[in-house]
Length: 346
Image 1 (spheres, rainbow, N blue to C red):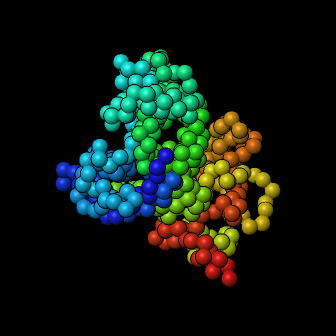
Image 2: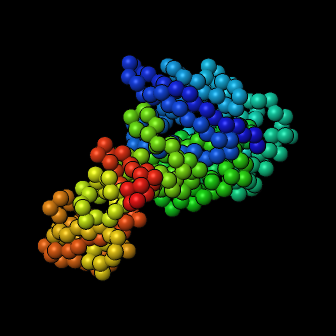
Image 3: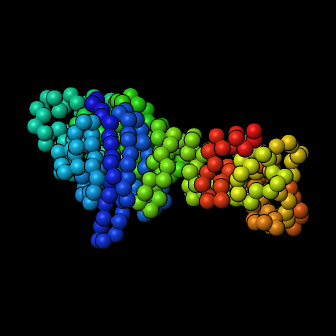
């Protein structure tokens, strides 16, 4: 399986006098798995379609390996794309669906049969050649759609929310299967998703987009722990923000605010050193299956935390967040990087 790097330089798209993509620069390493992540309308699908050649650029350049593909039509770019809707032909068998791209390229029948059988084995669907695609489950159809894209040996695989039509259990299973297949083939892959968990689990790097721009490019752990700004943090589940008080932990002493996730905040536990604490009145207590989510009305804001046992509404309680779970932001809502945090302590 061939694979190549992808480089985007000042990629800009204007549609109907509206800027959809605004000066995007991006480097994608060969053999890597990149997720384009962001809220609906941020431009991630338009960016994928621009790479595929379905959306023309207003400015900029797209390079695959050493060659520019900016002005090539989709069929000349040699990329492969898997759509959210699968786009399988219902009147064709599984084998005919897989072999159709090879037939268009003039591959002899015997070679087509060999490659179809090999792809079905790789997809763990051996023996399905003659089966109608209408007889397949949603997960099996998605595998065939993926196999049809891969069978032409593309240097770049593009995935447009390929798992969004599946139920939660199948989606979780196919995530690991897709990642395993991608790593075994070593193919450069770019996937659009709005699912944060999906991106964090699958990607080597995540491209976080907002309003047609790339806000942050980072490895999953870095993005989760060091979001570029408060907007990114909130998108990634940081659902509590508080103004920094003088008695708060020393981490990020120049911080204007701290952000933290509900799961990292605990209620009415023994006080520990190096923790942020806030006191308030319990306004809601909701069972979540593995504990309780507590809403706490403080003088500053409504905060959310977790508890092992229910707490009566109207009672006062103390929320604690360990220093390691606090994400510091400056007055401009930008994340304070680790270097600043260490300097503040010194």
